[in-house]
Structure formats: C-alpha cells, structure tokens
Length: 268
Image (cartoon, rainbow, N blue to C red; front, side, top):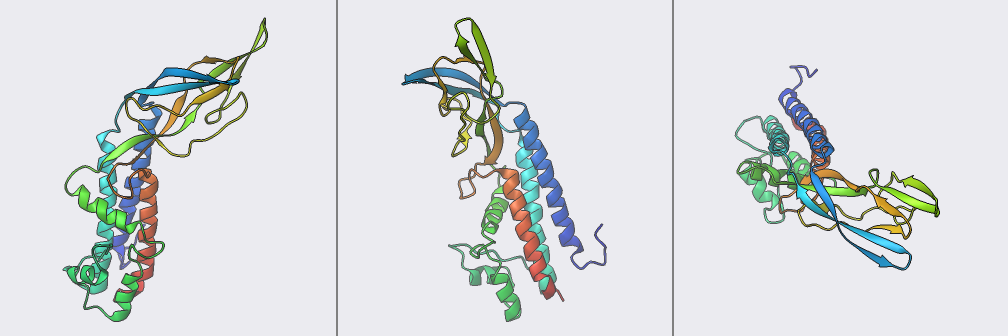
C-alpha cells in the first residue's frame, strides 16, 4: 500500500493503475488469441526433390475486440499523466507538464512549452538526460505519440501470427506397405519428420495472406491443419508498429518508473 505521506503518492497510484491496465490488457489479448480468431485452408502444394510444400492461406480473421484498444489507451494515459504529476511536484505548481522532445521538437522548445524552463540548471539537465533521444529512454517517444493519438481515436491494433505450430497436424508415415506410424510434432514449423524451423517475422492476419510453406518429406500424409500462435500488435503508422501491445506497454512502464526514481530527489 502506498502511504499518503509519500510525496509521490499520486504519481505512484497512476503508475499502479497503469500496471493493472497492462495486466488486464495481457489477459484480454490471451483470451482473444485462445479462441483461434482465424481460419486457414490449404491453398496448394508444390513438390521438389523429396519434399512436399503445403501452402496454407488465411481465409477468415476475427479482429481484436474494442476492449484491447480501450484498455491500452487507459494504460497509456495513466503513464503519461504520471509524468505530468511528477513535473508538477518538481516545479511546485500545477501549470506545468513533463517536456518530451523529438527529432522535430527540440528539447529547449519542449521545455519552454511545458513551462519548465525556469527551473534550476541541474534539474533541467536531469530532465534532459531522460528524453527519448537518450539511450534507455527511446520508448518515451512512443508513449508521447500514443497519448496524443488516443485523444482523437482508438489506438489501432492488429492481429498477427507469431509462429506456426503443428500440434494439430499429424503425419502418417508409411514404414511398410501394411504398417503406418503416426508422428505428432509439437514444435514450430517442421521441415521433415523431425526437423524444426521458426519464422523470422510475424505474419499479418489478413484474409488472403499465404503462410510460409509447411514442408514434409514425401511419403508422409498430412492429417489436420496447422494453427498459429496469435498476438496483438500496434497498428499505428509509427516506429512502434508491429510491436506486441502488452510487452511494449510493460517496457514503457519500466522506463517511467526509472524516470521517477531518477528525478524524485528534485522534489522540494
């Protein structure tokens, strides 16, 4: 429990609420993913040497529920507001905000617009050292962008297949003309009856998307369909696009907690 005597009482509560939202977000994504929000169909096969490639296609996709964007937006705003609360405590008034610069918004201008430019030089330097262009604080740029976007519309999220799994696929392997042995493979994408390989990049879950080939040695009979490990990523047209929503949100929260710890000593 956070003591009311803690000078960071309101800041810590905002971050605690952000943490709850992010955990709720993770559960919401897991619930969505566990319901297999897509359909696959075998589109075609190709043969080369002793291998058959099975090419599956996404035939239907159920979009992430609105709750994902809503919870994500709540988490983002709580984190951004926590920084503004921190700025108010440092400045000793409620007319300021936490400055956040970027490549087209220089720090000196951001500092002035936030009404923090009259603070002592050591405080300004400490704030300068936790800006998005400093190593370890890069994801603050994402927080700033997401906070602004969330004020105008739902944050855009999209479903992706993180890897292809084969738990639902069985190959019937003829040992002799009269004897078959079923092989059930529990690892990502298989090349032969025992080999595995993972995908290099997430697969956008859009109708008509072809999946990477599911390959097997000739003589193995494909029974069942593969399925995808699904997650939800940012769809905003920024450098955060494609990153898993709850993972990136946890990174942002971690960064903000570091900033609070670093700047707490400047609170009168």
